[in-house]
Length: 494
Length: 112
Image 1 (cartoon, rainbow over the protein chains, first blue to last red):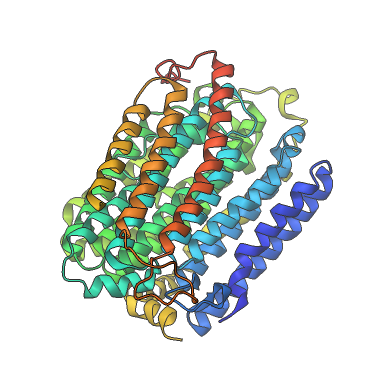
Image 2: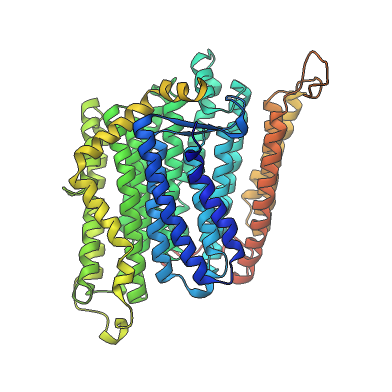
């Protein structure tokens, strides 16, 4: 029992509530949100350290002992995700200081930014299925407001669809919760896992499992439920798009991995083969979408879909090596994808467009931007020694060991096509004769724009160069989530 | 009684799905409202419609009803209330910005 676990949820919640009152003081809002975000980063580092050295932490809310009350559970996987949230949150916040229109800051940008982080952190840390729904809703309502931020006609139109799809998914989530509560009589995830393992009639649990897979697949953009993603992530300002692209779909993926390693392990031949097939289709169709696009942000959005496939592929293979690879991949993806979206925002600020055909020659005018982008792009495609290579290597190695050659072939092909579409961006945006005159961009200072991105690029290089210790850590996380009894004992036996 | 309740929930959700598939922007919002009603009914029914005393310490009864589904539904109602309010405003603004409430016209072009 430790109250440290409450801080990643409470700090952003209180920060958001207070910042609402400071609406007309943009400077105070900016300074205080920067301070709070830094504090959150320190808290999550401390949390990860405590949990890695001392084992799983749990907090019983209201002192109701589980399975009756709601528990927050911090294991290595959850605290790793909280740390990644803080890293990306800090980078996107500093980027928004540079790019967010001043008038928009007055319309509660910072409060909802923190409410979004409350929901994300809460979803990672909760140990109760209904509480997961509530934190999902906190996250979604904030994301509805952030995605429509600015209110251009395009954003209104696409956000409407985004909201409807997410509310529909939430309705299905409630149906699944009702099924599980009816079948097991409990909502505590550890307790559900115990009940499911003892249950004789498993048909109803399979129904609930597939319902939850549909729900989380809709939020995490799995095939064939990813159709909403590319258009809705195109609309909002770059700082918000980067936060969404890096984090939001990964909350869905986290929930899939959590439920399908803890609760639904009774019939892996059925569920995990479906997941593996979905993984292959998701990565293939996602990358085809990326190849066909000629817009910076749209290509990146389609790549989110194809890379979600890799993470789910690790779960579908369901071996320690594959899950370690998937966890490594999530860490790599969150950092690199946010960095790439921020690059898209930086080039948009410089050139005024995200259409690849309308820009060229930025290598001559902005070499630092070009080379930093190049590093992130080849990291995404999986070129050694960057972080993308090692995570994909573990996934593919595990696929070969298991004899799943189709998924291995698909993932290798997708890697190649990823490289192709990243090089397409590089060729169109950075090669060729400069499309801008000196007077067009002289007033835009590059360093403040790049400052929030450089740490992310440095992190992807670090993740690649220190692959050994990080992979050992990922294997630790995988071992912990593959043995549900560790989680169950930590929650139920105190 | 459970069968009747489940059928009612199923009919409400059928209506909701029909409304969600219509082309009018406002009807889709109504579909969302209906969906949340149907789902709430399902939560209540799937948890079992037991008969018994209110779950209070002073009641000396053999059986008590389960208060948890009501608590869940209450939470879900509050959430769906907030989301519906937001969705109505968004639908109104979208209608105003595009001067159309036909979702077919709000599809967007492939090349924008």
